[in-house]
Image (cartoon, rainbow, N blue to C red; front, side, top):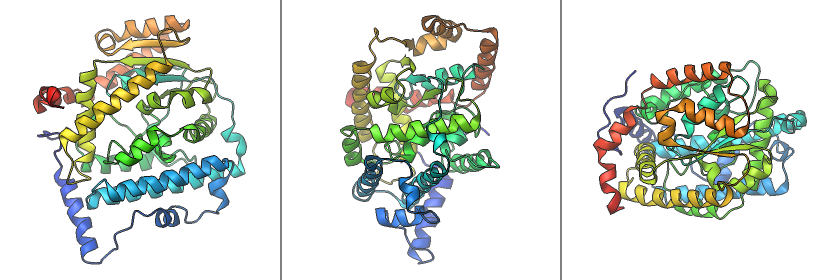
Length: 404
């Protein structure tokens, strides 16, 4: 179904406005209490049904402490800075209790089957770059190669394997709800329950800010995280990847990984996967900023009544500069196993860019791989995300560059 016109970067759908008013009315009338964004309360809800040992499982003391401190600081930032409306408060409550629950479920799984978290995997291929810089397109093209593997959206959304695997059904239901609340979701990023997607859900489960700072204004938590060693997050990420590869039966195939947050955390990411190959995407900085502001605005608009377009632009200009600096410090043009791809070149002739990438890695671009990539391109061509560039131009975001 085509999305309705998006009149402004901070536009809200009627469904989001209705949901916000409905939740607030339930609280005001005492039908249901407003759940506090308090770490102890969230822990009580999220850990319900699990043993205390499921939290620790095979994790180190430092990893256990890191998650607890992240939860404390994120909750404080949400209470003191985010200025969430009723819908935003409810979404924050749901995401944090879900992260606690999934962390316990993974811990329980690894207590029973510790070998899953330590399973051997093929060295991954990691797509690095700013969000809105062509990383999704390149990610899905590389993952389409039958010799490679990718992470299904439903597996990123819920990394806990189960039999029968109902995750595709649950993810499909979640996407239906998400599209009602934000009908412009598909114009910004095309989703599908079993479509290959980034592993942002695995990072969010360890309370990396990757998904949270695009939804909420949480400057103190963001600043603390940027100065924080991300080693515990990527230790958890590695365990989840090995578990997912083992249970999906594709551990022997290089997994193509992608998340813009990787740019901030490259030392820890490289420490976990020392034999990984990297491909880095590049796009004009101001174009990336315009698109990022549009994305973040669409997420913040329905969760806070105080979202400010100028403040969003200022923060994400700073954020993109930080990521560029950290990326350039780690992956220079001379770094072995790193290929650089230009956004415009990928759009002009993706086959040539893919062929060059494979040649630089010294691997064959097979006919089967190319045909699979052509099919992926056909799927992408039918998506709604092509509207986003038109929306950005109509919003006049680029006209505000000098003012930011």
